[in-house]
Image 1 (tube, rainbow, N blue to C red):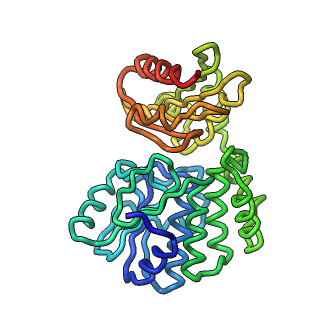
Image 2: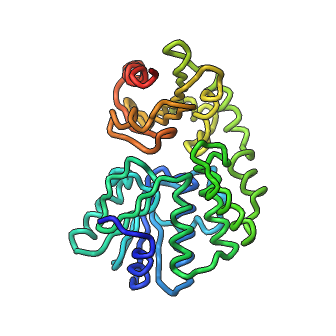
Length: 322
């Protein structure tokens, strides 16, 4: 069922042991949502743990307290909350734990901001906005927990990450007002801007140059594609976390409406990240392949030989470049 954040706050306050799950290959909004909510619940003396199936991305390892995030739960909970997770498959290996909790009739809560979210939990709050941390910030307020410096920092990480440093077209007055409140609470926006968008190891710089030297253009240069192979990453000494933001570079080329990053996960399996500039709905493009996300930023998984994957994407994108 769909619920308001006020209703969810009342239910959450009744919990005695909370698990928070977020999506595989987590980004700043995933960790910001999960860690800010966990911090708020712990301040209410509600034991809370955060879980994600993936390793911590190298670009986010600087986040204070991120070492407390675990891969697999043990014991039991009486409430499970998913945050920033567009569908159940995005939980990865944690899906088994979600299903186990559901079979035990334990309440589940889904708090998300992706337009493609199918409302998979018992209680759902899905509102499209710049970052899911905006939804979590409002929930924390309804829980009666003030923004201390730590909560503000976690929320700001998510806000900066998913808004593209306040550059995406879903940034609103609400986005900026929340940022102002977080800065007032002690979050250092200059520091987090540098850590999230500027700082990079030599390996990332080397990989970036290699990947961008191979940009390919299709559909009268309106569709730009970059590929990141496992060999490229090995040769550069890089990892998956270092590719964050790569897809934004080809999108900024004049004339490009849709940009795509194709990252090799394993042989014949590729993680697809899609971005659009003005009018193409990449949520629908990703949805064609079982993925989703936002109108201007979405993703999916594709299988096959790399040229087959590019052909499939090019044909599908062509249908949305009217």
